Image (cartoon, rainbow, N blue to C red; front, side, top):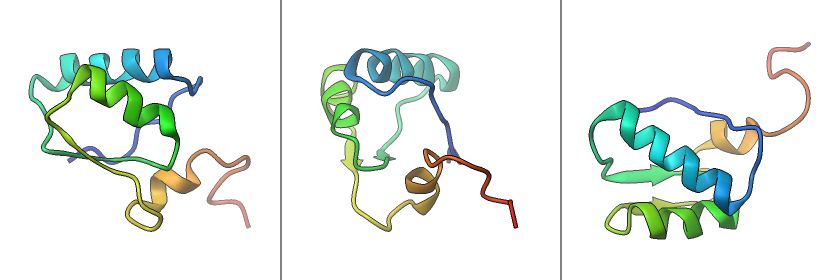
Length: 76
């Protein structure tokens, strides 16, 4: 289980590179990917890993939803 991975740019090309790097580093194909609602994740996943299920529903992974907001999550 991967906890959280954050990337600097968020478009289809960067997501494609991100998924390829993820596959290369883990040496296995995940069964399910949970992301935030960004549409480019689905487009890149269809090209790189068409057999992997993609879940991008609100509340499934609050860490992914909150990771792209400015500021620190631990700030008072």
